[in-house]
Every structure is written in structure tokens, then in C-alpha cells.
Image (cartoon, rainbow, N blue to C red; front, side):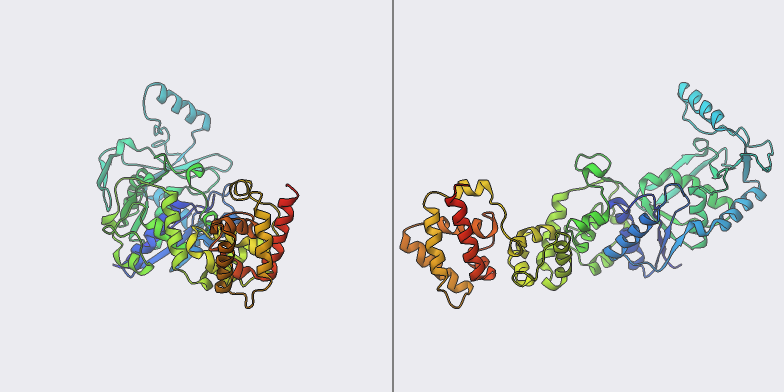
Length: 468
């Protein structure tokens, strides 16, 4: 049997971390087994589904490098097929028309709650033989078995079961003719020959219902694996407040796709103590038996640690286009300054995101408009202007202007003035960057160039002497 997994997002929102991890696990399982990943869009919720969300989900999958073998299929293009399946269940006597009004159902649920009973449909229309007539507001319900149990061996949780009396007769088709989630999922998984359903464990209750529909249709069951949910650092369900934003938001924050994929694969799965995996290693090692039964907690610091690793290991050319995009959004012309690759190389090993990287080299390409107040009070005093004026004079005679020549000039100058090196280096950092945080001062000034260094130093001297 060929392994076929599927990733079926609903385009009522963007792709978030939980969905991305589900997609990754399905992708890894299929690739490990030499199988196929089916990508389908569950867009039957017409009021909430949007083309924008569909485009964003596809873009996120492509950015993460999770390619698919079939699809994307759209459920709204398969409505005729769902009607066939519903009709088959009606013809077999495994489904029926229901005319219960919303008011009756609401009263039923309220009465059940008052009696301490789990709210569920009471089968009022189950055996009265209704037929849909023009203009009547009927739904179609599944005749769930009234006795016995539903069990399956989950690849992560082991044997899971529920009594059929705990399940009610779910709606298969709404009164407007649109199929419901549990019906479409079963029809799709049958038609697409899905062998393994890997999804969040919040779907376990749906699985019981879907198994009964599979059996009513006479179809073999796929294997199921329900992955525990991702929790926030507060051990509550992941939300926007604690990290569950769109995958593309992480891209825009300067996270690399390799880092996010590596982070997601370790959320609930492990291979010994290994933390960093190449894509090939993930495929080779991935095994559902190594997925934890308990929920994993999202840790932004761990993600940033991984991202720092991948940024440090990447070639400048790999990072270049993304950093250029960031600069463009900031309306910064990187042609007006030193070579961008060289500037990136100065800080590549010091940053956790590409946004941080852009932040730390931005001063090379724009005038300094303000100076960090804390840095000023910490590193500047009444002698600072004189020191900067003197080193500016020295700088004007340096030829060639290199990191080595700048470094030697700085050391010679501070020695002649009897000051410690930071007493000159830190004010110079503030003068050329606006803060006291730059790479080594000699490499920074060498890249900035002699004319721009002297210009910025003189502007800072003016600023200090004006008492700003």
C-alpha cells in the first residue's frame, strides 16, 4: 500500500504554527515512506473563507519548502461528489431528513444542560421518514449507530474508544445544500486514497464520527495519528498573545524558513538529544512513534537561538535578497553607502533575526538623526570633543584607508593622549552610528569610509559643543 498523507487547511485564516507543524509532520511522513502528500483547501465555509487566506496559506507552504504531490484540491469544486455520497447514505438508510428548527434545537440543548446532560441531538426526526420538499428547511443527518463502541489504534495515543451512545446524529448536509466538515473529509480521504491521517488531537472526537461514516460507506479506514496541541509559554492553548501568529509574520520578523521548520519538528518530536537537523535528516529520522503524547510548549527564545544558528551558517548571498527587501520597506537606498554584503558580514554572527541584521547596519546608509541618550551620558564628557577633533585630523591623513591602518591610528592616538581605548572608541561609535553598539570600531570605520567617518565625527562634535 502506498503511503498517502494529506494537509487540508481551512482558508478562514492564515497558516499558523499548529497548522504548519501538522503540514510538516504529514510531509515528513510521506517523504520518509516514499509516498505522497495531498494538499487540499477545505473552503466550504463560504462566509469565512477568503481568497486572501488561500494565497497566504499557499505562500506559507512554499516558503517553508513543503511541496505537495497532488492538489491543491478545492472542496467547493467537489460539491457534486459530496451530494453523491450523501445520496448513497440516504439510499442505504444511513441518513435521514430532519426538519427540527433552530428554536427547537436551542430549547433541547438548554433543557439538557439544566438536567446535567451532555447537549446532543435527540433523534426526533430519525425514524419518521421525512422527505425534502421544495421550500422546506430540512437538513440531512447521519444515522449514527445507537449501541456498541467506536475504537481505533492511534499511532501516537494507542487504543482510543467511545461509546456510540455518546455520539449524536451529526448533520451531513445543511439546509442550504452545503456539506459539513465530517462528510467532506470522509469523501475526500476515500477518493484521494489517503492512508494516514495525521492531525491535531482536538480532532479525536471527529475521528469517531468519521469512522462510522467510513464504515457506512463500506470503505477501509485510514490509520490515524493525533498530534498533541502546541501550548504557549504559559501552558495555555497557543494564541496570538503568546506566539500563534501567521507563519508569514515570522518570515516578516526575519526568521529563516530552515529555522522555523527545525523548530516546528522539535515541538513534540525528538531523535535522541539532537536539536539541529538538516532537511534530509528530518526525513530520514521522522517516526510517529517518537511523537510525544503530551503537548509541547512554544518558546520564542529557542526559536531565536535556532534562527541565530541558521543565519550564522548561511552564505551572505542566501540572506542578501531578504535583507534588501527589508531595506526597501524602510525606504533605505543601499547603493548610497558601502557594499551591502560587506556590511552584512560585519554583524552576521551577532544577530538573531534578519530584522536585527538590518537594524544593525542601517546607519551605514542613512544620516544620524539622533544619538542614544544613555550612551551619551555613559561615554561622553567635557574632553570628548577634543579627542574627536584630534582623531578626525589624524583620519584625514590616513592612506590607504583600511581596517589595519584605522586600527593602528586609533591605538597610537589614545596612547599619545594617555586615555583608555574605550574612551575614544565608544564616542566614535556614537558619532557614526548613533549608539554604542557596533562591531569592532576599526572594522566599522573601515567600511564606512574616511570621508563619511570624518563628516559624522564633525557633526557629533558640533552636537556636543552646542550642548544638545
